[in-house]
Image 1 (cartoon, rainbow, N blue to C red):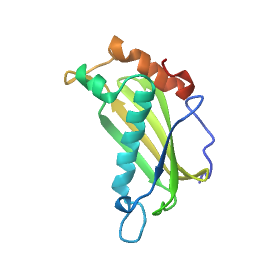
Image 2 (tube, rainbow, N blue to C red; image 1 turned 120 degrees about the vertical axis):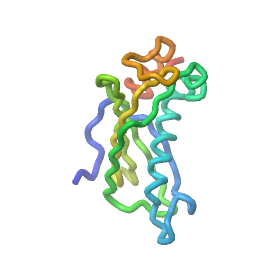
Image 3 (cartoon, rainbow, N blue to C red; image 1 turned 90 degrees about the vertical axis):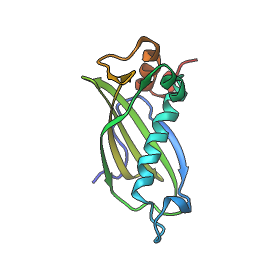
Length: 150
């Protein structure tokens, strides 16, 4: 079992800091499994915005990136009050799929790890290549936060 995040797809990960609140936990104070999924989506949407394109602007263009596959491994319990850093790496396009890898970190220890695959839809149709208007932001996502658009 890996205790520290050691490999990286991008030079630097996208980071989202979250505190576990009561609404994120079950009756025992352990983070509820559904909260992980919501945080993963928030991390991707925030990274996209930091890369220069809000998800709402992309949706206005008729472009969406739905999740088509997800694998989430819970390694250690995350508890009420924990300050979690969600580190995410956007991988390269593989066929029509875009791969993300995210780790939920507590003091540098991997508490959970997720692999998410997305596709790009344009006006409801699967796109093999992203539209020209979103390519710069997707490229910036792959490069990490040091490669964001100005």
